[in-house]
Length: 258
Image (cartoon, rainbow, N blue to C red):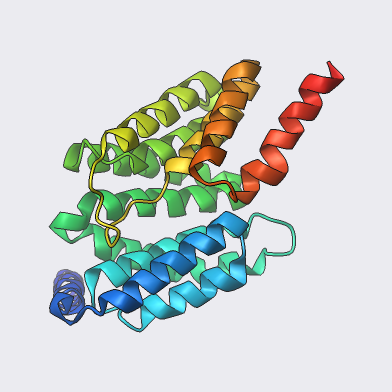
């Protein structure tokens, strides 16, 4: 009976995934672009309300692969925002759905790399809120990122998640600011090789990589390299709030105090 139930559950998951991603031809590109732009605006300002609005736009088209992917991406970023004081309720609200959605995306061959990257990032948020979960989830994160990189070696986003893991993990458990910097540098290198990027397809992470590279270089006391990374991020996006109002001013204060 247990075997039959397992097979039925698996069949149901596959069938639901097939149905979910059968609606590609019904894509409303204008709505999708509106959602993407709103999500980008939300993340530049780190505005959770705008990000929820973007997620709701994608949810209207969730039978479309791209829209469903971006809906899940918004959920991942809302989990990230839950780490800020006052936003803790976001984690319980979105975590279970985000995991389920990322698993569905990862099951679609052409989205395997992106889906597994998102799932790894979502698990990383769980570890950040509950350090004890690292025992079971850290190996999953690294396995997912290995698979994502094998599936699409040119995808820069797995390197962002791996770099963030290396940055945030204590050294005694395998963390390393140097390894983090190497991963962010690899992500940046891959982003800068890309040409004619389709605005509808996943393309997030470039200025985020520069910000994290700057943070890693600061930890390594490579302050000139950190300043260069932050300033480069602002050349790409002058209104990137995290760098403009936090990271770069804090670095300059540190340098001035010295």
